[in-house]
Length: 421
Image (tube, rainbow, N blue to C red):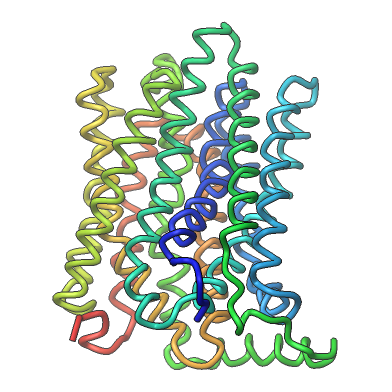
């Protein structure tokens, strides 16, 4: 455990810094490209590739464990993220902006994935077990606040800049440069405030031993009991959401002629990025309280229903389109709250399956498989939407919820796991 500065001084800000670049890279960039004239199919295909670093991060997570300190890694990646976000803003004024900005976002995705590994490791080294439990809710809240700042605050700001300058390109350029400046400020703050845990030290191992540990970590993961149903669950539980999450923001801003709602950037920022994230956070808190009282076994099917049934709001919005912000915001809030509630069961199972030796690396492997489950369906979602249209696509999403039900029936876990004793 790190002595000295209070954990309140760095845990919330650290997880805010973790959430902000992630939401900008994998979510906000899609909306930006759509507003800058890129087709739905190209946006879905190319931005889905940005998930790849989170898919393959287990391959280098052992090196973050063994080389240098977690503090060194997280500070290095924060300064890279700050500079990179600003560079995205600068490329938007170039002729080949899509190519250049995608290349920088790709590097940012790798830096952000490495940032995640180092932060999670530092959290476990900087806090004792009691503090780790106490700050779980705090860190999740800080992460969700970062989502509100990125999907809500930044989009509202970009919307206001569009009105002021009369230029979508300029508005997005300034927005990303401001986000980069914020990451640099967080890097400066963490350079000063982060403690130096005694246990956060580089491990003196040879290259041969690193590779040996690396191999043992992977082998032990895939030798876990019930590995096949666990892999199917981790990979496919979010099969509907992987497609919906990629297309829903594009549906909100697409023209009425194309079947979209034709909302402004600021309206999307308020409805999805602010109220939607508040719904997500509320659902997550409620889900955590429910699981701690009743355990995973008694809650699983309620949570499967919560993550699936609210997707019907997009069927409603596509078949009965409206620009009434009260209606749109309510629909998005309901869908996101249900998702937040249901997703807690998924997160708890990842923690359950990672238990034992190599817990940190095994959790990273599981999150990598989780990212693969988001990346592959997301890549084809744009082509499916252009083939089907928004109305039929959202009906397809409801049909895909059957996959969530099937994989949830396959997994095995201790009956009282997650229940507070």
